[in-house]
Length: 589
Image (cartoon, rainbow, N blue to C red; front, side, top):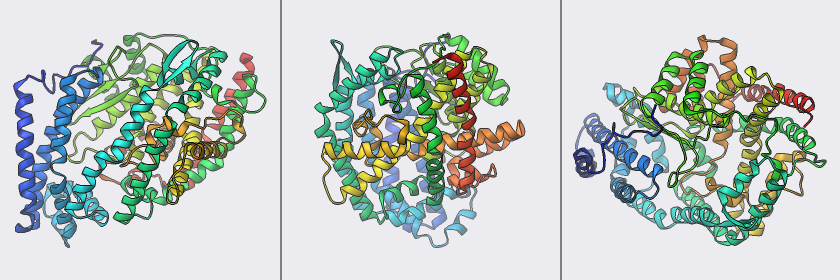
């Protein structure tokens, strides 16, 4: 079993003849797309659509290979100069068809008998969802020239402001016990077993934001104003309406989700108060102990033991999932260990057309790393289930993107909790699950609240750092209530969360709550229905690139606009919280 992934299925290197050939082929297909876009109205609709789709499919395959090879190499070596150079070239080549894409979209929108044309050809039928969405989206598109200007403007506008936030937060340092630590390192101290370390790190983190708060506030203000103005130009009612539109999700679904979350906030606050009391706090949990570890789960695993652990669990769920996980370990899909120059965190990248994925982790042998592997391999399983779609049907909306990954987490965590005999180990596992769930429910709600407030205020004023800090505290108080100590909150969370700093993706928060609770509800169905549910689950995953989130859920008989589904998902945590209360007493801490 290799410890590093192999990319040879794509190219053997930057000097490989195939790499150079594909770079040249991108230029050729780009020219062809731009030329064909100018002649769309000269051909019958069916012929024009098929011609452009053929070109887009060819372009998609080429860019997938080239982008994947360069970006995956760069992920393991951020100093890879060739990767950076080629990525820049590829982004420029990709943007060269912006005007053609707008022309194509407007052509699709102009076809009055689109459904009839779609029904006339198998390929068009396969792309029916995409083509109908293009027609619907055309209501919000500007002219070809205006779209090109907007794309160019964003490079030095919203994207540049986002880069500024990323640069400042990645370079700022906190003073901690005679050391200078970067933001990631000081924030990781929140998980330290020593309470003094956690508190000092929290104080050091808050102090370091003072160095960058003014330019980051400017970045946030300018990004949000750009989004507001763009929504107005395009005809969206609001940035939230725009986010829901491109998430292919109804407002009724979001309202049902948020309403259920609000109803169940007291349950999660109760968990926080139990934890606070166990740690010796009388006025709710201070922010610096939000991620304090509890119980004891110090067992470590080798990569081989992690493989065997996951294979054993997934064998009881689905043979195809088990076999895919086995392939991932045996066929060099996974890059396991941290090293200098490798990016932090974890991710999964699908290699469409190869029936494979690549998974990056920073494995250190803890049980949480096994859960991380399960999560990322869930994304790979999702990729497996959409592999047979046509090349342009390769994407699914944010709300359903975390379905398979979070489902895998539930399978692994519930198996581990059920198998744990030592109360301290079981406490550690349950605390970890409740901590993560509280983040995607309560903290995500606070993030939704402040982003809504920022958009509302930006219409009329520039928000200076003190104003933003006050808004952040208001959002945390509303979401966390008496679960947290109001004297120890985190007023600077608006600085460190990069999700607020995208000009092209607003409200990158509620999809986390959606994904977590949707997967939890699906897992509850699996627990109730057993193996018979797996077929529906896989059909649901398969449908994600070609269905709205509501139509996807309907495959499993779920109505997402019904608040009862979300209540059911949330209610399933009540027993866990009561078990947590019991174990805290049993373990005496």
